[in-house]
Structures are given as C-alpha cells and as structure tokens.
Length: 88
Image 1 (cartoon, helix red, strand yellow):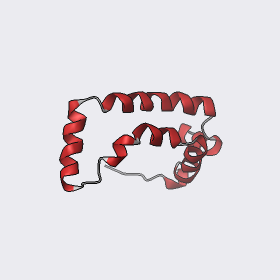
Image 2 (cartoon, helix red, strand yellow):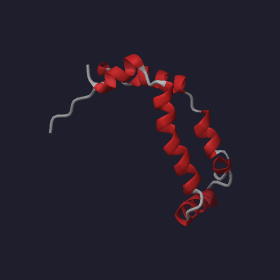
Image 3 (cartoon, one colour):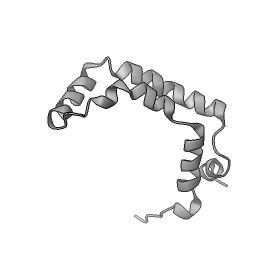
Image 4 (cartoon, one colour):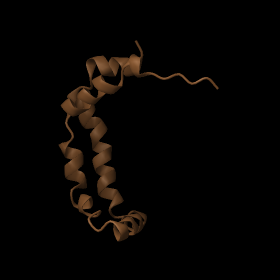
C-alpha cells in the first residue's frame, strides 16, 4: 500500500496535523507584511471590491480547518481508484 493510500485509510493524527498546520499559520502572518502580497491583493481588489475581506480572517480560517475535515478529504480523494495514468 502506497503512502497516499495509507493516508486515505488511516488519516492524519492530531499531533502530525498540528505540526503541519504550524508553518501555514506562520507563513500567513508573514505574508501580510510583504509588499508583493499587497500589490497583488490590491490589484485583484480593484476589480473585486470585496476581495480583501479574507485577509482579516486568514489565520482564523487556517485555524478553523480540522483534522476531521482533512481526514474526510483524504478518504474521498486519495484512493487508488482515483489514479489516472498518462503514457507519454
């Protein structure tokens, strides 16, 4: 059984999930201090006035993701029956 199939069958443990989420939270806090982020965000906001609302909730949104949700996603999508093969 490959690694993805193991994840689909057994899911991710809470400690591993927290360990994986920590860098995302750190990056979210860092990215909103960078000029490039704001240039892109404001450029997009020009055409979509409500686009900046997500910035206020970025860390909260990441924190809201649960281990249960991730494991449901893994069970749904990481199955060998979902594999596609490409011959080049």
